[in-house]
Amino acid sequence: MVEDANLNAIETGIFAALNVAGVTGDVPAAQHYNMLAPPDASYPVIIVQTLPGDREGEGMGFDAQTLPVLVKCITKGEHSVATAGKVQNAIHTALAGVALTITGFTSYAFRRVSWFSFMEYEDQRQPIVHRGGIYKLYLHP
Image (cartoon, rainbow, N blue to C red; front, side, top):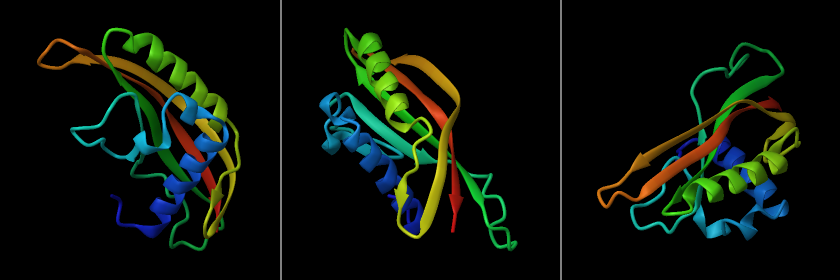
């Protein structure tokens, strides 16, 4: 878990937006994690990870801050590519341009700046697909 209370509030806001948008129909809320999924997680899962850098103005008296956030779906198994694509589209639809509810901040934009898709294989040759995007969160304290 992230130690910073503000980052936890950001993750909470993102997960709330995903829940409201119905993404949990594809990926139950119990399968949303920050940074890493546990080894015994059941797939698909959604991972949210705040990334370093771009905290513009922090401690410098500026009013606004930006924060890059990775949001991705990880799927596993025979139909994992199609499932990952479906969930990635649902995530993007739920988050594109949304103003998040984040305790202690006013979020005025959440925009995807890049997307990614890659595949790896585990020991049993099961494909594991990662699909998602890097979003930029614009905040005002």
